[in-house]
Image (tube, rainbow, N blue to C red; front, side):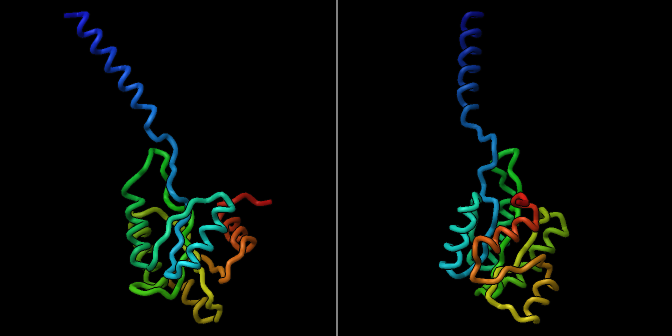
Length: 165
């Protein structure tokens, strides 16, 4: 009987040890959320950010961005899983625009439902009214389309996401 228990305990330890090899220890989630209804813009941002070593998540409109951020805060891939480092938000999208989405996300952040994440407008609009509206709804910055790698790197530096040169 004691021999059976000992063999069974040893088998259990070996099985647990083998299973622990497959437990994720590091967060492998996307680090940056890009919200845009234009597939070309999403593809461009994915390539530019990928060339800087980042994984991205994508949303096609403001409503989807809220769902993605909430899901990310609820489901952790590992104990080291962290929220998005930054959100790049288009302004003009169907279903829910970037202004409405930012207001909703900032409310969730204020209420502690999701972590604080900087939101940066990523837009072709450069007029003063749109720029002011970006800041009024809670966006921390703006980057103009077409986005290039140098402009993107500068924004990421500003928020401490990449190291200064």
